[in-house]
Amino acid sequence: MPRSFRIVCRPEHVGLVEELLRAEGHVFAPEPFFPLARRMEEEPAPLGASVAAAFGLIYIQDRSSMLAPLLLQPPQGGTVLDMCASPGSKTGLLAQLVGPTGMVLANEPNPRRLATLRQNITALNLIQVATCGRPGQELPLPEALFTHIQLDPPCSGWGTVERNPRVLEMWPEHKLGPLVALQRELLRKAATLLAPGGRLLYSTCTTNPAENREQVRWAEEHLGLRPVPLHPLPGFEQSHAWSEARSVALSSALGEEDGCLHVHTGAGEGQGFFFAALTCFEASPATSKDRREGSAALESSGRPHGGRGRKKNDASGTVIRPGEFPDLEDVAWEHLPPGELREFNGRVVFLPEPALSQGLALPPSLGWRGFDMGRLTGQTFRLNPRLRLLLPEYKPGQGLNLDDVRDLRKLLQGQSLDLPSGAATGLSGRARGTIRERARGPMGSRIGLYWRGLPLGWATVKGGRCLWSPK
Image (cartoon, rainbow, N blue to C red; front, side, top):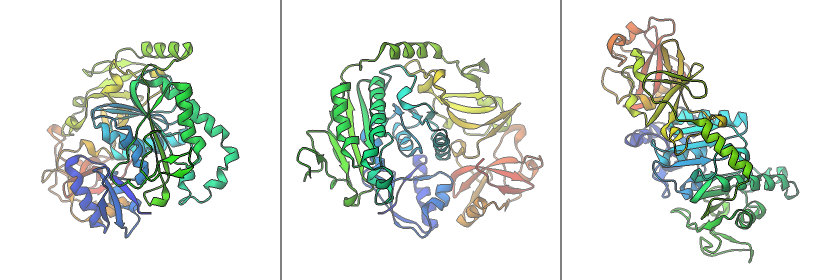
């Protein structure tokens, strides 16, 4: 089965990312269902070990897995809840769909998987993603809060059998009761969080009817949700909807009568997936306890502080302004979407504006976290080196612009590169100077790293040499 991936960068840099992949011998073709999706045709070395992957410019994802966010159809600037998010494959695509002015709240209850989710989101520079780590069925959020919800719950994974032959042994049918029950708990919670007229996309990577169509039927009967017809996207026209009443694969790509879509592995389109879009026409009846908790959460969240100067709030951190740090004057802060920078115990995070607005106002009781921007020690703000988003467009003499992909490989392998003596850091004011002049401190300094003008991240300069570390 061919490997697929997404390009993750600013629109003007897509061609450079493709050029970087080709420089390492990779051959690929566009996928018809999403402009930034590609399918591998020749892979001389593992794609996951490529330079583009190391700098977070691509994300490897099964092509049928990409369908869930695309079928959810969140609008540009929209706000989405991803209830079971790790490792972040669908979260990342959702973030690309809503764009920098939107927001995705990605929830993952397992601490290790939550850490993986955050690492992936940071590497991809998806600054519009906020994360939290609560059981999805217990999210302390007001009801009817989201117009778009993605629910990809834990499942038996029978659709992955071609890649994981033991999955049927790990999850035989007689052991699936707890999974089915959990899926219903998550569906019930999703129904309370879905705004009237909103869209809930339920998906699994299993072929088990009890986790698929039967769950949709249960949601119709017990939660007041209604299916929305799904149409296959370009490149998936040979998929078949499954009619349980006749127990045969329909010849058409979609069973309009039940609104569900099933991608089969036999069609060579990716791993097996089930999709159902659901909506509600009025607020789902919530328990009085849910209503009390929701109201209390909104009240406790309060109105966020503005970004003018530092202001301390124990629950919301300290609001900071980028202009406070003279050594970072030439960082491209204008690339940040609407939102705020706040400090929490030395960690600086970006909080998207939708998470702070009165329309959403995520409560502190949720324990949510914004995007990791770096560390603040005294008056020294050390940027997250992966923040290529904040690199200005390359200009000769500012930053390090490499032409040979082999030099990038050396940096990724822990080697250092000698730097041109005349190259400047690109910082202004009292921070300006050549690389060699600024590299005298024990911690070194930061410099923008580029490949043929493609922003990659912030490298460290020590003793006139350049090193790369993602931490």
